[in-house]
Length: 99
Image 1: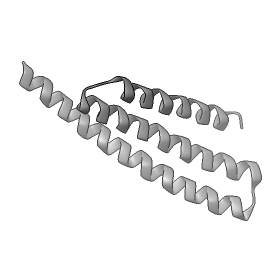
Image 2 (image 1 turned 90 degrees about the vertical axis):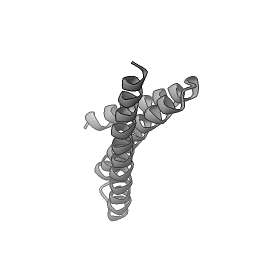
Image 3 (image 1 turned 45 degrees about the horizontal axis):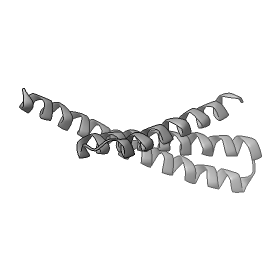
Image 4 (image 1 turned 120 degrees about the vertical axis):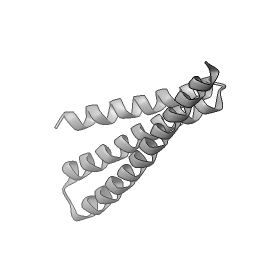
């Protein structure tokens, strides 16, 4: 049971880390890549939070809210993962052109 709070905390810290890194970088391509990484960890946070809330309360209302959080978490993770792959490829193309 301690696994879920640890996963929630780690994913939230990594989300904050990538959001701060977005603010510290000036390159738009790097900002988009870091923002997509932040979306991945936000999706993990929402997903694990939904599971944890259902396991903590175990009511019908928490089940519906947990399912909603699971769907939103998967959606956010998928968008972040797709964007991350896209911007990683764009960054590789940019590095190939500069050589």
